[in-house]
Image (cartoon, rainbow, N blue to C red; front, side):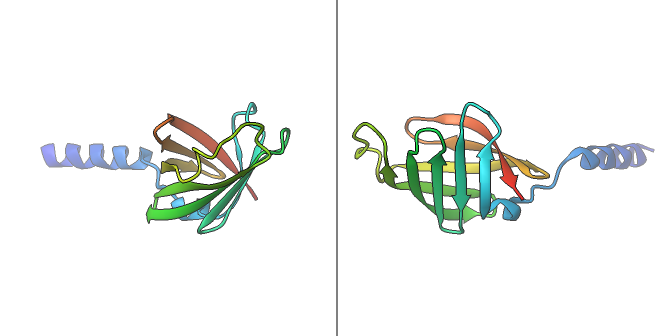
Length: 124
């Protein structure tokens, strides 16, 4: 009987765990779910270009996938920013995809200046 209850418990827990479809989010066009961030993000397997549609600041980052659901971004070039950002070039952000749900993904992004969870939506 104990084995049967354990089996039922295991099946019910398993049905609530969600499969991450990280490969669906390796490339494409993305937007922050938070409306206070008007950036459009275009990502290829190895490059990401983030454009703020209001300020026209453009951030170019290289991407290196370290696992199926983790990658590191390195700032390569920042255009149209009003201040000197030369000290940012070369900095890395370590990103782990925590969950995916349809066209949305939630990530944990960490660098020397940030440690936050962010949600994105992929434009189809």
